[in-house]
Amino acid sequence: MYKKLNNLGFVIGIFFVIISLILIIGGVISESLNNKLNFYTGFTFLVFGFCMAFFNRK
Image (tube, rainbow, N blue to C red; front, side, top):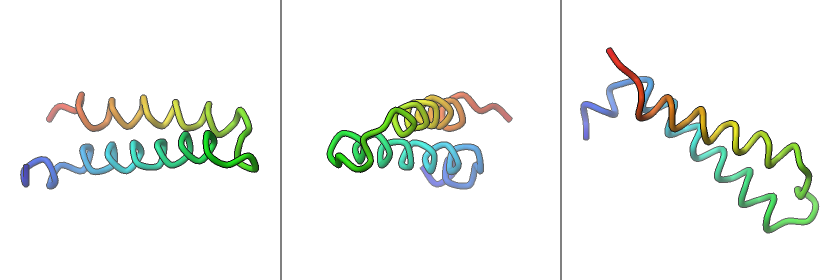
């Protein structure tokens, strides 16, 4: 696990996954944040975060 934390791609990927979950959940819960841009950005960040975290090679 500590070797993954030393890998910058994994850390950046997890950051984007967390930000995307905040955008998506915030868009579902709050009516003031409920616009399509949050969902599009959230899902894009989610895909990018998973790609960075789990498909990185040295």
